[in-house]
Length: 247
Ligand SMILES: [Zn+2]
Image (cartoon, rainbow, N blue to C red):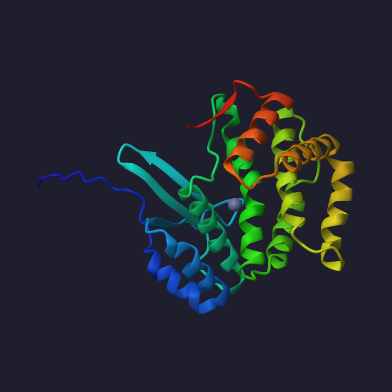
């Protein structure tokens, strides 16, 4: 028998199949999808990854010689309590399609995970802010759920400097996201967590404040502002020559 070699890529799920379910579950998602996603006719490959660890989903843009491939990996199929996750990842890819997304690459291999965290820090709260303000998504249940996971992960400060920095970046991202929640009782759990963090992870906490001040100083709406933040950040921490912007 002749052996035939075929090129097998990860199996993906048709977007229309997922979207039908998502729209039935949420009118907010339906409006977001009609008004934002439908503006662009580019395929997204949806890849179900039940063993995804640490997060519910993530988006990737892969550059190939034939053009860009847009992918979203997700752990759980759509259900009422994870709709925001799907909208959030689509939001990242729309920003990438619009050229608003800063792409960072580590020239030092030990920092490759950090680039993803930095890109998330710059974008997550912007994507969520649009979902909340324009499409009325309720962010609080998601933030509370992820805070539970974060509490488990951040019990004490890591010893290694680069891990402390990763933690500072994640903390800064959380601060920017929780700033979208109006003050009051709903923020209490978050404020308590921050107080613990100051004590358990003092260096990461201090660095996250420095990161936050850099971001607030430049603003983070445009790609030019993201570039300015990145330049100041690599000078301040210092990471110069260890990561760079992909043109
Ligand atoms: Zn994100």
